[in-house]
Image (cartoon, rainbow, N blue to C red; front, top):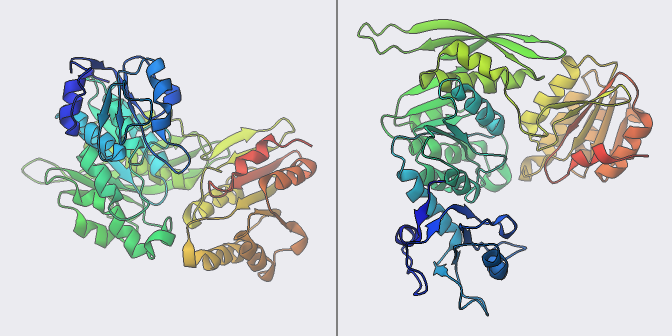
Length: 471
């Protein structure tokens, strides 16, 4: 982080400096976690459902915090260097916006979508690194909210030229708020699916909320859109700038024309058709092979989007493709974990929705070199009134697939169990458990050498706990 003076901070937040500060004190970092405070940090006291940062002021100043941003003055905190604001969350965003705008030459790529945004963010950062070595910064982990985005921005250093920022959405106006903070020049939408339909009510409403990223782009910016998506035409109308597309559609600027599913990798041929800046307006067309050290055809579409971003930013296509071969995906996202007993775990337990569920199952069913295939699936949350229908449809589809055991954890998946049995899946091979620990006990007693096991469910289910179960 570029150091800031407390006077600069106070001016950005429209806050009053307390008399005990000169304003020349240096802010060396920004944090919202009292446990992570380092000397010179500015601490934002956030209030949540379970904790209140205002209660940890003594701790943060004992660790060397230079000042704290607060909403109120706790008892006993009168002698601390505090900046008072109406909302510490909004102040965090305001300061991040100020910090970002001090880097006018920074190119920000904003990425959102119902599925694949974290993977696409990791892939995009890797592809761009091939053309901007040591100059790409990206949001770590799930730093994609009104708190995570500002903290990512504070991680920018003067040498950074590119920021790849994932943007999450839980309701209308949230992506617009994040875009106002980060000011993206390129906006990527991976897909419009079912995630958050409980809050928004329809996929059209989800598309409208996701398109807030597009409407925030400048006229000289660039939108990267999924050409195969049913909401493509709607998204296209929202973009105030040039548009490039990716997908399997033959008119895509980055078209995935071939795929090869190997037991230890996934590869595809991407045909790039990039509009030319030349006066004859002829397009530039070339083909690039992408090989990923992961299983999953759906990951190739994420890689295709990442490749398109990198090429649009001037990275040589083959160099970007080679960088994708080395990409490291976030934890619990199609992570292949060989087990001591000679069986293999596909840990994709970070989250789940109908689209990502089928994509992960497709890997287990058609790419994994398994003797037996076992799916351990948890509830898909945040589906609202659509939950029963979507869980039922999953079960009817699974009834037609070459699956050996269907293990279900949670309550909504009872509809999946009923539908699978009604569709002809052998009832003795459909098992239901209320929690991951019980499912784990069954797994460790019954798994055999050569089995492949998929863990897939919403974050609230916590299927990864199965890994630690021993019997």
